[in-house]
Length: 232
Image (cartoon, rainbow, N blue to C red; front, side, top):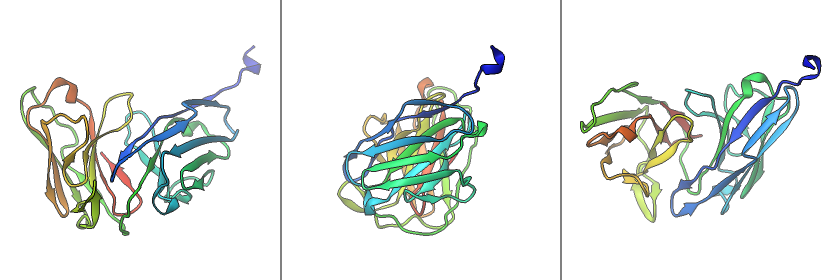
């Protein structure tokens, strides 16, 4: 009966792992949530160890074809432009994102991201060049990321100090962003050696020495100056 049929919105979640001084595993539940518009919904995020300052946890929303969009940072603080129906709660290793009344435009994938080391403050703008690159297999390509101020030098990479707080991610259609390059131009575990990072201060570059077919996708840089923001 069409009159009794309810329209449902799907909210997808995924696991997100961020690496800094060691390995931290982040688990989100539920994997998929179907919600009737106007109803409340909560998404949970648990980390394998306490986040920095007990509140360094961010929530993102991603819609098909778009970059991850920051919704909430520091566990409970709404990013400018985030509707008031969104709220964040929790501390230490257990966090929740709540939408008080789901709207049709809220359908998408939701990610949480934890931070386990200090970051500095400030309003930072990221700019990436080469919005679209068409490259023949075997050819090199470089993607540039510029920040509106120097990336701080007091960031951590493993047990070392003095590396810029900027990471690179790769995202393929239908998949979550995948960490490729850690702060300090260090390859993340599993990243092919044809990938490399260079630069410092406010100008950083990701280079693929010989592009392979499986490298096709979207690439993002992320700065840790303030509430983290992805840019495509």
